[in-house]
Amino acid sequence: MSGNEKKYNRYFNFYLTIEDRLILHKEDENFKTCWSLDDNLSSRICDTLNKLYFWIDENDLLLEKNIVKMFLSLFNQSEHYNDETVIRWLSISKFICKNKDGKWGKITSLLVNPKNLGDYSYMVLKENKIPMHFEKIAELINKTFNKKVNIKSLHNQLVFDERFVVVGNGIYSIKSEDFKPGSVKDIIHDILKEKPLSKEEVIEKVNEQRMVKESTILINLYKFKRIKSSIYTLFTLKE
Image (cartoon, rainbow, N blue to C red; front, side):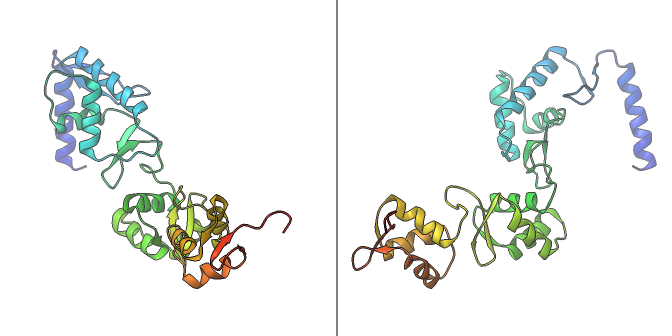
């Protein structure tokens, strides 16, 4: 902070202490120190911030316009408040904040306050919504968060972090119903557990979850029981 800024802040703080109309709201465990002209309005704002905190999921990352809209829907106001005003109100909370990418969420969320390369990788994959090679993930972490990444360290994090699943040669995705952990053989087993399928159908379904060569799928498929010319199923316990 420059000398002029410090001088300005002293004048401003002095003005706040002598202006009778201003009400001081001291810092507590939920909110930062702030000033207001309307104690009732201030109470409504704090109540709404508390409600908003419980509305937001731990893994939510909200665009600024969306969290403003959510706040106003909970605020039940008859007056009109612009986005800039609401953002100032949001900044009072100690438990809702925005990350370096400009998106809002809970301060306890690793998407808002990432701790390690796994958290940054999760944010990149969640934002882009597609599986990526670990080198591309490293590139986007560097570009988005201005954070230099050791490629080997990142790869090791992705391998051992249970939030991720490898879906191809060096390609990772966030673990989900669409991308479950396991080998190609495991994926085929889960597919055939539902019903017997043709070779082409198995290949199509595996390709929805894994980025592997067709030959890799076929090598694993041939380990299962063929009941017709090109229909495969699981072996029974007696077989």
